[in-house]
Image (tube, rainbow, N blue to C red; front, side):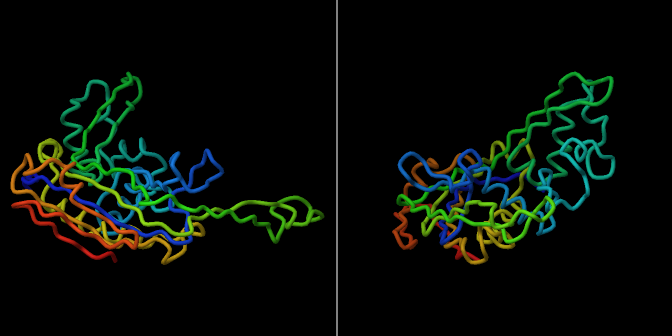
Length: 280
């Protein structure tokens, strides 16, 4: 398949209602907010969800989460060096051709050729701190709420004893759950054709990403994010007519206005039409 020939920009508008979209482990797992009180979902969190949806769609994914992995590998290194599921140990020796290894990794794993990856390990006596960086063409920004969000914290207790001899009441063990009551978030991204040439990211790969963006929260329910509490409202997709792009990404993203209820409006950009997809 030929590499991507046209620059692409995209945006995602989503709604959070009574859910913790992205907990901060350094703040008691409270929903992430900035200093102004605006809700935040990190780009790492968003890419995790996209990887999960792509894996479920049958694409080979290198960075698989432990609870969703399909190949049984116990670490990224094991997956990379596996003769069955990866490239084999010889590909990561200090003496190996790094460009050849990077090309093989991009061809094998969708997320490597899209988001990039750093392979920072080597094997056996040939180990020497080898590092193979791959810069991907797909970038995604953190999602921020349009307005400051209200975070509700609820104290919870255990109904049973998790350990011990049973003499201590389980309800003596206390905990906290946190949620965003309601919020409209938006995020932006882009796909760079020049970097796509280096990784082999194709038009078909772009269409695969486009297909999973509206389904980002499908099969992602948990206690913190019950079914229906996270919803993609709209995906806006701009495909330019050249590699360099007809407009800067900043100008394209700035043409989108999102209202407090999640409805969108787009300022016209001559020669560049936006495709709007409804959420799943």
